[in-house]
Amino acid sequence: MRVAGLLGANALMLCIGLGLLPWLGVARSWRKLVSRSGLAYLCGLVVTGILAAHLALVHVAFGWVALAVVAAVSVVSGAWHLRGSERPVWTRPGWPAVGVAAALAALLAEYARAFAVAPLNRYDAWAIWALKGHALYAFGWADPTVFAGSEYRFANLDYPLLLPSVEAIDFRAMGAFDTRLLHLQFLLFLVAALAALGTVLAGRVHALLLWPLLGAVALAPAVFDQLLTAYADLPLALVFAVGVAAGARWLLSDERWALAVATLCFAGTLLTKNEGTLFVAAAFVGLFAAAYRRWRPLAVAAAVDVVLLLPWKLYVRAHDLRDINYSLTDTFDVHHISGRVGVGPIAFRTLAGEMLDPRQWGLLAPIFAVLLVLAAVTGARALAVYGGATVLLSWLGLSWIYVISHFEYSAYLDSTKERIVASVVLAGAALIPLLATEAWAGAQGRRG
Image 1 (cartoon, rainbow, N blue to C red):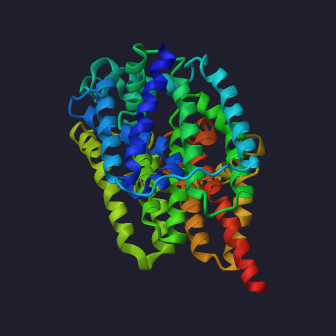
Image 2 (tube, rainbow, N blue to C red; image 1 turned 90 degrees about the horizontal axis):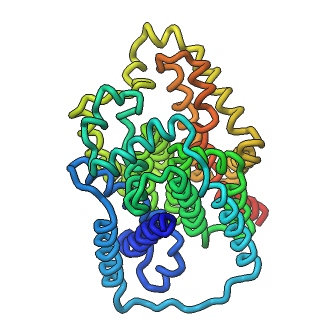
Image 3 (cartoon, rainbow, N blue to C red; image 1 turned 90 degrees about the vertical axis):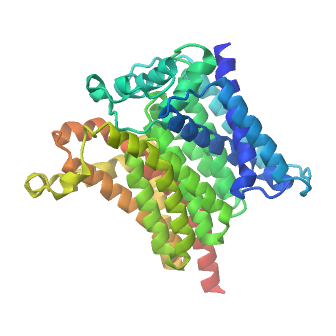
């Protein structure tokens, strides 16, 4: 029954996403809604997390009733938006696509056997994320007794509440604080992200590029291992990667719906972990650099993300919550920085080693680097600038965190290096099919 409750809650999130797609401009007809329905689950998951996190700040619990109401409103309004539009037409899928999709489904089903019984035994999982999720489940809101209490300072109280809010919804749906079945939600993040990534890239890249990428992401050892820890780093990375891919599609095609999806995913990134601010800032710098003539829609997108982050920042400011790991203001502390500036290159090289480790990420990072150069050389400079800026600035920013932190750098680096590169690697991986396609097109154009 608990599994049914968790899956039922996620089914309602899927409905929320389906109703949202017409309003995002993703689907302007029933036919487009069906063909792009792969985006629905992730969009619904992110929107539900954002809404629940914000409501938790004003003493409103988000459970079955709220989920059902939001899903009903979303579905009805989405159907109203599509009234009288073109109906879907059945087309037989190709056997290769069916075979690969079946293999991916079988892999994820096998993963589920491990996720359904995994213990919540990693420190950050129970001391930070599940603790907050349990508090939201028990109290119904972000009670300052816990979320701003000095006794809970160890739990990184300044971290945003999207993931704990989703966990609290799961606990309410299951009717219990079940820390084993909770792991299934992290696997469902992977399902949602793979479906969304495939939908964003479909129509722009060949299936021979798309399906291997989805398989490589699903099979990457770090993806399985880190999702099983129930940390926020992999959900953060998956949502960010879809946002980066959507931003790239907008860059190449100027489709407004792609920028809307990117904006939503970036908002989810911002509200998952503090590092999300670094990643989203890097992505927007890349987009502005690559498409500076289209700065107006980018400015609107950035403003929307700032507005969605603002309620949490106001809560943080009102309760004087501070990051126990580092403070960006220490960047200007000359005395502190002068004694640690050598940490930067060490962290930069260490993180590079993690990203290039085939036992963690396969060959995703090297392939991205090669294709980035090829795209730049063959004329796809806008995409190369965007991808290069997003990855490099994120990488540099993560390295700088170890410089400004007051922790002993080697222990801090060793304890975090494997997981914090996830967003950088998956963001680059999400661009691989587009880079390959644009590089090939550029090379063919030169020959012609």
